[in-house]
Image (cartoon, rainbow, N blue to C red):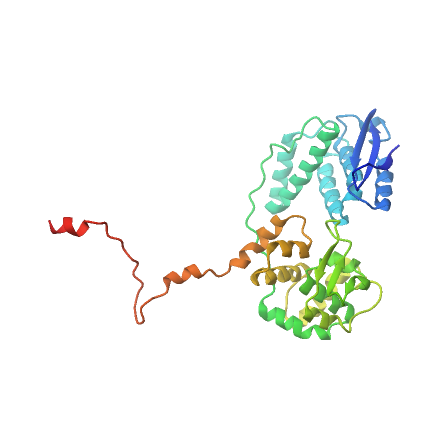
Amino acid sequence: MASVYRRRGSPYYWIAYRVDGRRVQRSLKTTDPVQADRARRSVESSEWVEGARGARGSHFRNLANHWLAVHRGAWADSTAQNARCQVDAFARWRGDDTAGEVSPREIRQYVSLLRARGLRPVSINNWLQTMQTMYAWALRSGLALTNPVADCPREREDEHVIQVLSETDRDRLIQHLPDAPGPLRASIVLALFCGLRAGEIRRLLWRDVDAERRRVLVRRTKTRKYRYVPLPTVALALLADARGKGHVYNVGKKQLHRALQRFLKPLGIEAHWYILRHTYASTLARAGVSLYKIAAWLGTKTLAVVQRNYARLAEDYDSDVEVFNVRQAGADSFSPRTETRPGADRRRRR
């Protein structure tokens, strides 16, 4: 059996259970009692806690199920789903009934298989990071003897260039926004002028869009932390007659994506929701807004994400390149200045 409790000095719920006669205590990284109870039920239904097959050396599927059950309450739904797909694919390739711990050789063989299938280096590194995180947790919990991913080299990734709307496409989109239906128009405005994610828009309520204080309260975020995002004047004007009750746009993920594509196709604009979010951040960076503010408004987990993607946009132009300008009017070419050492002319005359 598993029990959920509050520990003094910690804002989160904790869970305690026994695995192979050993007591395990872990923080659920959530303050929501509903999510804590959901994690407790998931752990109690796990084969690890119910006994027999919870010893070291059990097959990979049991370890992965236990890891996912313990962290389900602390992760976003998309993160849990991606981790589940990654470990399930490896378990099917390895064999669900294969006993013993995973070896580094199996990790390298599976990486070679992913590379042969044409997966990008970033996708392979994401899988390796998932496995690294799982086995690091298993080592701390005493459920694994070694980490087979520790010595596996990562793939070399090409530098990722973010896609943003051009100024022409952005102006055309803003010009035709009044023609969009109210919920879709509000969603595009919140993505283009506030940088909200598609999932945050689907969960956003109109009561959290405060026109008087000119800000949006984003409660249910990817990082599980609420944030306030300021509303610019142009966004307030576009949201004036689109306001309703309940959710801003209460549709599924695919329906939201299709609605955006149907609206952008006649305009000749190719974009998705994340391109609108990138456009918002890049516009702020080019305007000289501090990266700390951009990170706070975007709701990123660390400042390094903003520095990697948007820092260079703030330095598109550097006045130092003006050294190549021709200083004399009518000059045909630029001749660099040469320095003469002291005494050179004197030695030459001798």
